[in-house]
Image 1 (cartoon, helix red, strand yellow):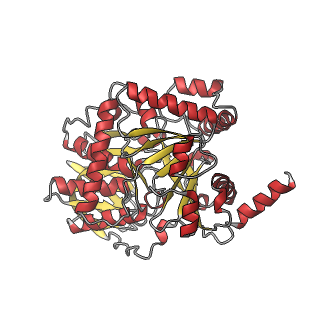
Image 2: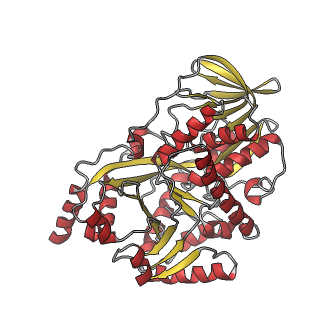
Image 3: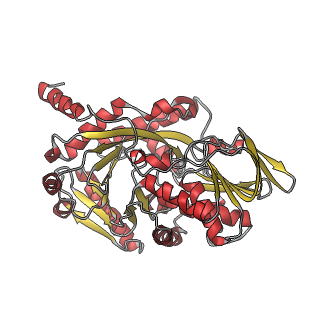
Length: 475
């Protein structure tokens, strides 16, 4: 490494010297105390397993559909402590992990999926207001930025394709001058601004607010209560916990990255670790140096991409790029901290925003995402329709989990709705192969994606084969 490059690397890592290895969002002083664990036996109409967004929305929507329904929610640790409390806070209308993925997989349904996604985000916003959830909700949209010339041409062509297909509502192409007028980075060469399809929010405050809304409607929430097993019990189901049990007529499973109580579902997801940094609050001068007056979320167009946004107190969250899958699909607390990725992200941050030299990072953290082979949620039932599940959101679940909750409730009710008629809901992704094939395939894909980013987006034989199988992958 040249001396100048070594000096820059030292400056970048110096910015991490005081960063706490904990999620910024979960350190909020307004964090509520956990509810007591379940002891003894309980019964209910609907048992929800999992206290992240998926489970919380299911419990809340169940009570809003039928206020008389008796609902219990079990959380193995504390509500919002996992992916729901450590994500970037991007709340997207897309139900399909972005429009390109949805159009590639469900072209005949894409207009309906887009409309359902818009309605879901509108309903999300209305629910936040109705229940008085103070989660710093800002519907500012998102800009997908190009940082290479070939990406700029791809964004322009993609926008033209969306216009031809009638899918470009509220999506605007920005050339280099226009995108830098929104956010001033010397690396930006073009952008697509989705003006209404994405909101920013405080992810942990959302989870805590949903929990309070559930409690206010009469949901019994038990924290530090892992569900150990699931069995049929008469006309219903029974779940055993460390200190008790719950019998329920119906069960909704929202455990996502954690082992599903239905063993046959486990092969459909793998945990992939994602990492993020949070800066100290920017001064008015620093904020002025980068513009960003409209507070959009941003993400770049590479295969190994970054996502970044402003918090309510004008910190910059900078995450993404590395996507780490550990052999055997293990989920461990020690994987939440990865200094080598933090150093890499810090260097990328100052390359994007050299005018912010000297800014310090206060927090650095990671967490696991439940990834499936089609990169958007899948659904199903078991035990003659008495159990429903949703999983595989692949990192865009802040908004989509509300839709998934309604799908699970429709399935448990045995109802045919516009949601349950979707091919996306009726069909499942391909399962991942057993080890060592899963780890080898993911590692080869990541290597190939890095090469594609370094060679003008050219996809090698492996990536083209994965594309043909519907197994494209990005970070």
